[in-house]
Image (cartoon, rainbow, N blue to C red; front, side, top):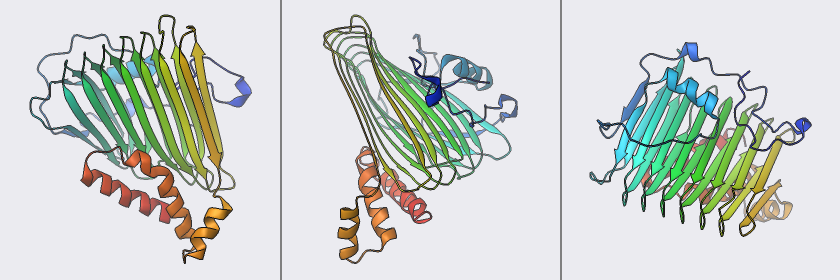
Amino acid sequence: MQLINQLPQPTWHHLGVNEADSRIPAVSWKEALSAPTITFSLPESTCVPDAQFTEGGLGSVWERELFHTASPHTYVLDNASGNPLEIHVTLSDEGLTPMALDLHALSGSETTIYEIVEGKGEYAGLTRMVADKHAKVHLVQVHMPDMQSRIWSSVAVSLAEEAEVSVTRIELGATSIVAGVRSTLNHPRSVFNMGALYLGRGHDLLDFNDVADHIAPDTHSEMRTVGVLDDMASKILRGTIDFKRGSVHAVGYESEDVLVFGEKVRNRTAPLILCAEERVEGQHAASIGRINEDELYYCKARGMSEAQARELLAFAKLRPVLDRIPDANLHDRLLTAIEERLKNHA
C-alpha cells in the first residue's frame, strides 16, 4: 500500500491520522493517459531550472512515481509578459490524468499561477516551486471535478531570502481528495501563507497534509483552512509547523474552522507544532461546530428557510478564502459553483 500524507511525527495509531485514510485507493499509474488534455496560457521554458526541489505534501515516494509517469512541464517565471500563468486540466473517465509542473520564480518577479481541474475522472498532480530572493508568487489551485472523480495533488515550495509565496487551495468535492503542501523556509525572512477551502458531502473522503518547515531565522508561515462537511463525509487535516534548529525568531500560525451539517460526519484534525529551537513563536487553533441555534433563529426570523440559512452561514464560513482569488471572473464562477453544490445538499 502507498503511504501518502504521512504525519511528520507519528501519533497514536488508533487515531487514524498518521497517513492517508486507508479507504482511499492507491493511484493506478498503469491507467495514466498518454495524451491528457492540459492547456497552458504561456509557452514553456526552453531551459530546465537549476534548483534543488524539496519534498511535497504527499511524500517523495509518491512524487517520484508521478515523475516517472508524467512529462514535467517547466516554467521560469520573470513576469516579463505581465500575464498570469493559467493551466487548465480536463479530466477523462478513460484513465488517470497526470501532471508534473516545475516552477522557478526569478529574483524580484511577481507572478500569479492558476491551476484549474475539471471534468470526470482521476487526476494526479505535483507542483514544485522555487522562489528566488524577493520573488512573490501566488498559486491558486482549484479542484472542481465531477463528484465521482478522484484527486491526488501535491505541492512543494522552496523559498529564498525574503521571498513570499501564497497558496490558495479550493476543493469543491469528489469521491476522494488527497492534497498536501510542504513549504521549506530555508532562507532568512522568507514568508509562506496558505488559505484552503473544502466542501465534503455524501460519502466523500478528504485527506490533507500541510507542512511549514522553518529552517532559517526570522521566517514566517501562516496556514488557515475553512470547510463545510455534510452527510457522511469524512475528513482528516494534518497541519504541521516544524521549527528546526537555527530558526530563531521564526513565527508560525495554523488554524482550521469547520462547519458541520451532517449527523454522521467524521471530522479529524491533527494540528502539530514541532520545536527544536527555543526563540520561536508557534500557535494553532481549531474550531469545529454545528450551526448556532441563535444564528439559525435570526435567519428564520428574517424570512429565510432553514436551507437558505444553512447556505448563507456556509458562505460566511468560506468567503475569506474565496476572497483571496484575484481574478474576478474565477471568483464569481466559484461562488456560483459553491452555491449549486450547497443547494444540492441543503
